[in-house]
Each structure stands twice: as structure tokens, then as C-alpha cells.
Image (cartoon, rainbow, N blue to C red; front, top):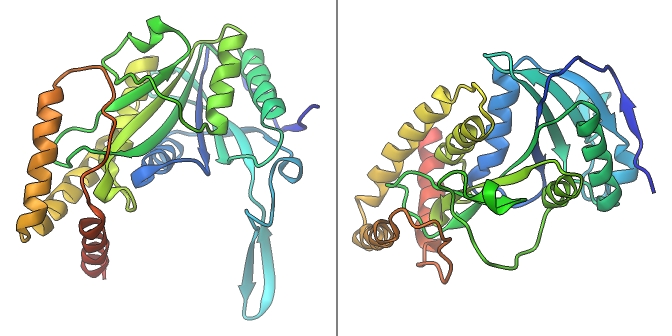
Length: 289
């Protein structure tokens, strides 16, 4: 089975990096979503083309947006899966796969994406994601890696795990990349589990910085770091008012500091953060209003 792709234009690209940033999979703290937004806003992108959304998506799960103006239908916006091209500040080329994670035909979709990337001479596939972890907000965000080769996994100081977990379509694309000899790696930001349900800019900044370091790109994460500093102050202010919350954060700090630079992924039960997460969401809503 093949997946239809409507080509808009074929830009001249030199050894682009294929960046995967699709909606629909694990994205604690909206780390990958806001990293993608930063890339799209900070880079001048051009549409390369789009995949057949009718064949890939279940529109009952991903419904189009109906826009009404004074009761009159003005527009109907359908979810899409697009491939866009861009160049960074130093002239390095990127291909950005953005949009909704497909509901159907993952194998065919992965093959089509990788075939297109190879046609443009891609040199690397990088997926972006984020998941909740027993990490405190008072420590730098750490990145975990899911790489196609041991050499790539060990190239940087990323966390490495031995574990079986459900996969998203980005993993299928990374796996297909490896099958055809295209190096691939998934970058995963660890987000404090008590902050996983709200935007956590530090995770997005870590993903942008990790992508830049891994792929040799010139990317600007200044605004994300500024937002991260603001969020840190807000979290500090809330946690300072509750002794139990302070104790939980201290416990997480001790665990993080004990782990040090170990390149293995911490697993196991999370310290309870449900109450703190609910208070954080309420506090941030009140602050924003």
C-alpha cells in the first residue's frame, strides 16, 4: 500500500535534517509542541507538500474546525500532515514533518516519509518528544535518546534506557530510517511529573538546544529560556507555601543529584504529585487571569 503525497514544490536542499514533530503522542509539558512552534516561528519555512489526510486520519477523532461568522460558515479547516523545508541562521537545511499523527497505515506512511527524505538527500532523522519523569523543576531538563545505533546513542550525554514501551509513529519513521541506512535518533525531554499537564518551556528549550547540538544547527531558543525562567519563578513561589511540596521537591533533588551524570534512565514509581499538579494548574490559571 502506498500513501499519496501532493508535492507543492521541490526546493534545492543540501543534506537536510529531517525533524519529526507530530501531534498526538506523549508530549508532557507540551515540550515537543512548543519546540515545533518555536521552529516554525523562528525559521522561514516553505511547504514542500502534504500527505493524504483522508487516508491517514480518523476525522471522528481529529475533527475539522468549523469557523462561523455571525452564524455563517466562513471556513472549514481540516487537520493536515505536512512536510516543510527551512534553513537555519547558518544556512543549514531542515525538513520539518508537522501536523497530526496518522491513525492508519503507519508502515506505509513511514516508508513514504523516509523515501521523500532520501530523495532530498537527508543526512539525519530526529524525532522530538517529552514525557513525565521523577525530576524536579529546580534542575536542568535532561534528554533521553532512542537511537538507531549504539554509536549515535553514546555520542552525547543523553539518558539511555533498556525498557519496552508503546511507540508512536515517529518511532516507526526512525526505525524505517535505520533500515535504509539513514541515522535516526529520538530526543525526549524529561518533564517534572507534577508539571506535565501544563506548558513547561524548559523542556521545549532543551529539545531545541539538543537538536542544535546533535545536528550541528544554529537555532535560537532565547525566548523559550526566558519563558522557562518565568515558569521557574512561578513554581518556586507556589511550592514555597507548602511544606509537603517542598519535601517532595527535595526528595526529587536528592535523587537527581545522586544519579549525577549517569547515562541510564531512572524508572520506578513516581513520588505523588497529583495534589501539587492540581494546585499548580489552579495557581497558574489565577495568575494568568
